[in-house]
Amino acid sequence: MRIVLATRNPNKPREFRASWPEADFVGLDVVGIEGDAPEEEPTFAGNARSKALWTAARAPGVAVLADDSGLEVGALGGAPGVRSRRFAPEATDTANNALLLRRLQGIEDRQAAFVCALCLALPNGRIIEVEGRVDGQIGTTARGKDGFGYDPLFLPVGGHGRSMAEMSLAEKAALSHRGRAIERLRAHQDLRTS
Image 1 (tube, rainbow, N blue to C red):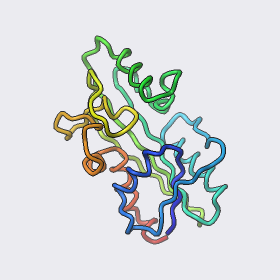
Image 2 (image 1 turned 90 degrees about the vertical axis):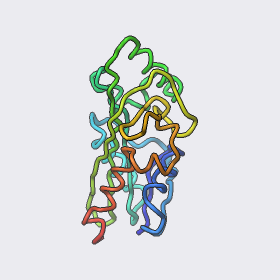
Image 3 (image 1 turned 90 degrees about the horizontal axis):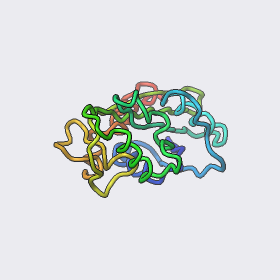
Image 4 (image 1 turned 45 degrees about the vertical axis):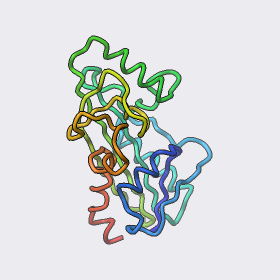
Protein backbone atom coordinates (compact mmCIF):
# COMPACT_ATOMS: atom_id res chain seq x y z
CA MET A 1 0.00 0.00 0.00
CA ARG A 2 1.31 3.44 -0.88
CA ILE A 3 0.64 5.96 1.86
CA VAL A 4 0.90 9.70 1.37
CA LEU A 5 1.76 11.54 4.57
CA ALA A 6 0.00 14.88 4.48
CA THR A 7 2.34 17.26 6.26
CA ARG A 8 4.51 20.27 5.66
CA ASN A 9 6.49 19.65 8.83
CA PRO A 10 9.89 18.22 7.79
CA ASN A 11 10.34 16.56 11.20
CA LYS A 12 7.26 14.35 11.11
CA PRO A 13 8.36 11.95 8.33
CA ARG A 14 11.43 10.99 10.37
CA GLU A 15 9.24 10.14 13.36
CA PHE A 16 6.77 8.16 11.26
CA ARG A 17 9.56 6.11 9.71
CA ALA A 18 11.07 5.41 13.13
CA SER A 19 7.72 4.16 14.44
CA TRP A 20 6.54 2.41 11.28
CA PRO A 21 9.33 0.51 9.48
CA GLU A 22 9.50 0.77 5.71
CA ALA A 23 8.76 -2.96 5.37
CA ASP A 24 5.15 -2.36 6.39
CA PHE A 25 4.21 -0.61 3.16
CA VAL A 26 5.44 0.15 -0.32
CA GLY A 27 6.25 3.79 0.18
CA LEU A 28 5.81 6.83 2.38
CA ASP A 29 5.66 10.06 0.44
CA VAL A 30 5.58 13.52 1.93
CA VAL A 31 3.13 15.32 -0.25
CA GLY A 32 3.87 18.93 -1.05
CA ILE A 33 0.44 20.50 -1.24
CA GLU A 34 -0.19 24.03 -2.43
CA GLY A 35 -2.11 25.86 0.23
CA ASP A 36 -2.81 24.77 3.75
CA ALA A 37 -5.16 21.97 4.67
CA PRO A 38 -7.90 23.23 6.99
CA GLU A 39 -7.22 23.10 10.74
CA GLU A 40 -10.28 24.78 12.18
CA GLU A 41 -11.78 21.99 14.26
CA PRO A 42 -11.83 22.17 18.09
CA THR A 43 -10.20 18.73 18.51
CA PHE A 44 -7.04 17.00 17.31
CA ALA A 45 -9.15 14.21 15.81
CA GLY A 46 -11.30 16.68 13.90
CA ASN A 47 -8.28 18.46 12.46
CA ALA A 48 -6.57 15.19 11.47
CA ARG A 49 -9.73 14.06 9.69
CA SER A 50 -10.12 17.41 7.95
CA LYS A 51 -6.51 17.34 6.71
CA ALA A 52 -6.75 13.72 5.55
CA LEU A 53 -9.94 14.27 3.55
CA TRP A 54 -8.69 17.56 2.08
CA THR A 55 -5.48 15.87 0.92
CA ALA A 56 -7.25 12.72 -0.30
CA ALA A 57 -9.35 14.87 -2.64
CA ARG A 58 -6.08 16.08 -4.21
CA ALA A 59 -4.32 12.69 -4.27
CA PRO A 60 -6.84 10.16 -5.64
CA GLY A 61 -6.07 6.46 -5.59
CA VAL A 62 -3.68 6.44 -2.63
CA ALA A 63 -4.07 6.18 1.12
CA VAL A 64 -3.60 9.50 2.90
CA LEU A 65 -2.36 9.73 6.47
CA ALA A 66 -2.80 12.98 8.39
CA ASP A 67 -1.77 13.86 11.91
CA ASP A 68 -2.80 16.60 14.29
CA SER A 69 -0.94 16.74 17.53
CA GLY A 70 -0.05 19.08 20.31
CA LEU A 71 0.51 19.78 23.95
CA GLU A 72 -2.16 20.02 26.65
CA VAL A 73 -1.15 21.65 29.94
CA GLY A 74 -3.54 21.13 32.86
CA ALA A 75 -2.74 24.39 34.65
CA LEU A 76 -3.52 26.29 31.44
CA GLY A 77 -6.92 24.66 30.97
CA GLY A 78 -5.60 22.36 28.25
CA ALA A 79 -3.80 25.09 26.30
CA PRO A 80 -2.09 25.34 23.94
CA GLY A 81 -4.06 22.31 22.67
CA VAL A 82 -5.07 22.45 18.99
CA ARG A 83 -3.30 25.82 18.78
CA SER A 84 0.05 24.32 19.79
CA ARG A 85 1.78 25.27 16.54
CA ARG A 86 0.29 28.78 16.66
CA PHE A 87 0.44 29.39 20.43
CA ALA A 88 2.62 32.51 20.22
CA PRO A 89 1.93 35.23 17.63
CA GLU A 90 5.26 34.47 15.89
CA ALA A 91 4.30 30.74 15.67
CA THR A 92 7.91 29.53 15.93
CA ASP A 93 9.19 26.78 18.23
CA THR A 94 11.32 29.30 20.14
CA ALA A 95 8.45 31.76 20.61
CA ASN A 96 5.97 29.03 21.56
CA ASN A 97 8.32 27.58 24.19
CA ALA A 98 9.10 31.02 25.61
CA LEU A 99 5.40 31.86 25.92
CA LEU A 100 4.69 28.52 27.60
CA LEU A 101 7.42 29.14 30.19
CA ARG A 102 6.09 32.66 30.86
CA ARG A 103 2.53 31.38 31.30
CA LEU A 104 3.75 28.72 33.77
CA GLN A 105 5.99 31.01 35.77
CA GLY A 106 5.29 30.55 39.47
CA ILE A 107 2.97 27.57 38.87
CA GLU A 108 3.94 24.36 40.65
CA ASP A 109 1.53 22.00 38.86
CA ARG A 110 3.25 21.52 35.53
CA GLN A 111 1.49 18.30 34.47
CA ALA A 112 0.96 18.03 30.74
CA ALA A 113 0.35 15.55 27.94
CA PHE A 114 1.31 15.27 24.32
CA VAL A 115 -1.62 14.06 22.18
CA CYS A 116 -1.52 12.79 18.60
CA ALA A 117 -4.59 12.04 16.48
CA LEU A 118 -4.09 10.15 13.21
CA CYS A 119 -6.57 9.78 10.39
CA LEU A 120 -5.93 7.39 7.50
CA ALA A 121 -8.22 7.89 4.50
CA LEU A 122 -8.12 4.74 2.38
CA PRO A 123 -8.75 4.76 -1.40
CA ASN A 124 -11.91 2.68 -0.89
CA GLY A 125 -13.46 5.46 1.17
CA ARG A 126 -12.91 3.92 4.60
CA ILE A 127 -11.41 6.07 7.34
CA ILE A 128 -9.34 4.80 10.27
CA GLU A 129 -8.88 7.11 13.25
CA VAL A 130 -6.65 6.51 16.28
CA GLU A 131 -5.11 8.56 19.06
CA GLY A 132 -1.97 8.30 21.16
CA ARG A 133 -1.06 10.12 24.36
CA VAL A 134 1.93 10.41 26.65
CA ASP A 135 1.74 12.10 30.05
CA GLY A 136 4.54 14.10 31.60
CA GLN A 137 5.37 17.53 32.87
CA ILE A 138 6.82 20.78 31.63
CA GLY A 139 10.40 21.50 32.70
CA THR A 140 11.60 24.91 33.80
CA THR A 141 14.22 25.23 31.04
CA ALA A 142 14.66 23.87 27.52
CA ARG A 143 16.96 20.84 27.34
CA GLY A 144 18.30 18.86 24.42
CA LYS A 145 18.90 19.53 20.76
CA ASP A 146 16.86 16.81 19.04
CA GLY A 147 13.15 16.87 18.39
CA PHE A 148 11.00 19.88 17.60
CA GLY A 149 8.13 21.92 18.96
CA TYR A 150 7.80 21.58 22.73
CA ASP A 151 10.16 18.57 22.93
CA PRO A 152 12.90 20.49 24.82
CA LEU A 153 10.44 21.33 27.62
CA PHE A 154 8.44 18.10 27.86
CA LEU A 155 9.61 15.47 30.39
CA PRO A 156 7.61 12.32 29.60
CA VAL A 157 6.65 9.64 32.10
CA GLY A 158 9.12 6.82 31.51
CA GLY A 159 11.77 9.15 30.13
CA HIS A 160 13.95 8.95 33.26
CA GLY A 161 13.91 12.71 33.77
CA ARG A 162 15.00 13.53 30.23
CA SER A 163 13.18 15.83 27.87
CA MET A 164 11.92 14.50 24.54
CA ALA A 165 14.70 16.52 22.88
CA GLU A 166 17.33 14.61 24.87
CA MET A 167 16.22 11.22 23.51
CA SER A 168 17.28 9.37 20.39
CA LEU A 169 14.71 9.05 17.64
CA ALA A 170 14.21 5.36 18.52
CA GLU A 171 13.70 6.14 22.23
CA LYS A 172 11.21 8.87 21.41
CA ALA A 173 9.31 6.61 18.99
CA ALA A 174 8.95 3.96 21.70
CA LEU A 175 7.08 6.19 24.15
CA SER A 176 5.84 9.26 22.32
CA HIS A 177 2.25 10.18 21.55
CA ARG A 178 2.93 9.79 17.84
CA GLY A 179 4.63 6.42 18.33
CA ARG A 180 1.66 5.16 20.36
CA ALA A 181 -0.84 6.39 17.77
CA ILE A 182 1.11 4.71 14.97
CA GLU A 183 1.22 1.47 16.94
CA ARG A 184 -2.58 1.54 17.24
CA LEU A 185 -2.95 2.31 13.56
CA ARG A 186 -0.67 -0.55 12.51
CA ALA A 187 -2.73 -2.98 14.60
CA HIS A 188 -6.06 -1.83 13.14
CA GLN A 189 -7.97 -4.69 11.51
CA ASP A 190 -9.28 -2.53 8.64
CA LEU A 191 -5.72 -1.67 7.65
CA ARG A 192 -4.67 -5.31 7.66
CA THR A 193 -7.51 -6.27 5.33
CA SER A 194 -7.36 -3.30 2.97
